Image: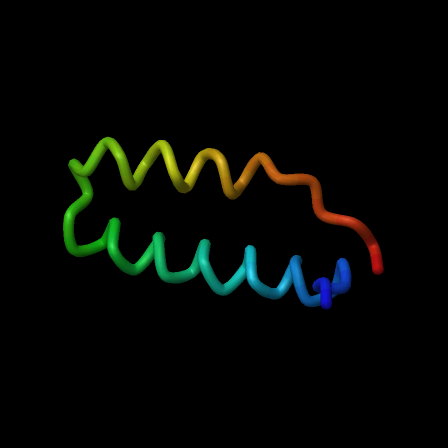
Length: 47
């Protein structure tokens, strides 16, 4: 059973929000910043 594109985009947005929250607590965390960059570069469809 797979995820729909809409579900996947929701997962990406939720994960990105949690990464942003973690970066507020530890803004110098380079690994979190890299992860944020990866998630922000994921294409978002209009569905």
